[in-house]
Length: 134
Image (tube, rainbow, N blue to C red):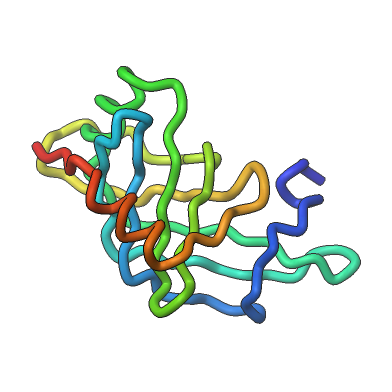
């Protein structure tokens, strides 16, 4: 069992899949990549601890560029209403498609507990984002 599976990530949702209204990968300089069609999945692991993972569509070339410039990338998830989260330095897995106009699936999972963001904190954070594009 991995360290990720052992953690209870403070997940307030029942088992199931949930659509994410808006998701971004964010570098320390606030450059951001919009994730499309993001979904999180909540499962129950040993001892009833909930686990989370998810997936989305992304232009891989943007992720490669971001990873070349930054050692750490965070994930912002807006599930609607008060459910806005910061996932610091998540584990990311993606295909090896580097064509600028091709999208592929990226998978993500937390390395540590995610942090809920208040509405003002979320809006302030998003107002500083600098979206990347091809």
